[in-house]
Each structure stands twice: as structure tokens, then as C-alpha cells.
Image (cartoon, rainbow, N blue to C red; front, top):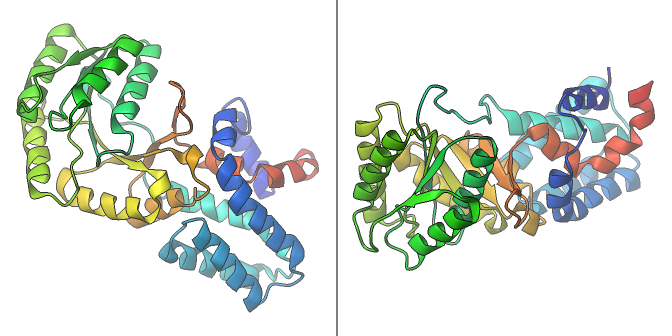
Length: 331
């Protein structure tokens, strides 16, 4: 069975081969990355060192990262040798398949929520990455699923952060637990957890300050918040999500590494993926950090925060290749 046939069957259970959200959100990356790959595979008539060098440049240009690029190229070389492939076009489905494998890894991208009570999700990340907006969109998502949601305004440092979260609360119809600007964030979290328990809330979404990631006081503050939450709900927080701006490329990787050592990250949210032609950063981050990408931001609308799916991601990128394989799939 061909790769594309297996990919189609795996996605058919989700109602459609490629969701329009992923397809639209990855348009810039598809135009910049896939078109160059497509040109390379159709222009080159043989698989030689020049072919591999050009493919390396394309992968680096898409922000896949050096380590991931080398791993991918080595894998392709091994497949070419093993299958005795001579025509570059035969590598198209193999490249897609290997990208999915790199994105999936060992971890699951689904959310770890408490099925029988309160689930607490803590959001961390530097200023400007879209953290508060992500929380608002996630509140909308869970409320749409019929869950009772509450938000905690734990970023008491940045001017306007509390008001921004309140604005989102008004938009999506979700209450915000807050104190005045400059208050102890851990005290806000304590109040929020108590309110969540009293009101029978299903999901508590907690915002935190986003000062520069190398500031010791911020990391100590996050650890204090973490301890307060754990004291009140022993198995919480159920998720600690690092929000990263996809348009910052490799800088997002350095942020993630610094946060990961201090805050017990369980997953990643990549925002503004629709605003960059370097969507390969998803692959790089997934490989370098060994953390699952839980959600991606694919636009500015309230429902443009999508749970990440590696099949849909790669299929949206290589939609042209998939369509070209339709005859083979249906045979």
C-alpha cells in the first residue's frame, strides 16, 4: 500500500483529508518551501550530491534547523540506497512520510485533562508571543465544547495584561479572577483555584508574566505559582504550555530551552504560523525539545487556534503532491 493511500485512510476518519484551517494557515510555508522542493525534484534528473546540497539549503531556509536537516538527509540517503531509488520524484512521498515521523515522535499531542474534576492549564512564555490571545481562544474552544471555564490573570507585571485578559473574557463569556496590577501572581493563582473549586469549574486557564526568559525573578515567580497550584490541587497543573511565536524562528528554540529547565513544560503552542514562510520551525522545535506541539495558531479569528495534527500539517503542506497521487490512491 502506498504512503499516500495510508495517509488518506488515516485522515479519512477525521472527515476530510486536509482541513481548510491547516491548508489556509500554511499557505506561506507551502508557497516558499514546498514549491522549491517541488522544483528541485522535477528539475533534477538524478539523485547526487548536488541534489542533496540543494535540498539541505531548502530545508535550512524553511527553518527546519541544522540538526533536524542532517537527520532528515541521512534518512533519505539510507532510503535511496535501500530501495535503489534513482528518480528524485520517487522521494516525494518518502520525504512527506519522514516529516510526519519526525513530528509525531513518542509523545501524544492530546491534552492531559482531569476527566473527573478540575483541570488546570498554566501558560508561560515571553511577552509578545500571543500568550493572552491564546488563552482567550482556548477559553472559547473549551466553552464551545460545553465545559465550564475560568481564567486567572496571573500576569500582574505587564501594563494592560489584566485588562487584555478581561477583554477576552467579555468576548467569550468567561469570568476572570484578578487582583490589582503589581499583586503577587501566586496569590492570584490561589484565589483562582479556590474560585474554580467553589464554582465547579472544569478548566482553569492561568496566564503568567512574560518578562525576558533569562530573568531569575521571573523563573522564581513561576516556580512559586507552580508550588501554590500543586498545594491546592496535588496533580496539577495538568499541562504547562509554552507559547512560542513561529515567526521568530530559531529564537523560539532558545526561549523554549530556557523555560523548559525551570517550569516542567508538558507541551508547546506555536502562534502566528500563518504569518511565516518558515513553518519548518515546527519540525525543528519538535525534534530539539522532545515536547509535543499541542496547538498551533493559524489566523486571527477566535476559532483559528487548532489542535496540532502531524498528518494534517504535512498533508496541508504537500497538498499538491497528494492530489497528484489521487489515481494511485484510488487504484
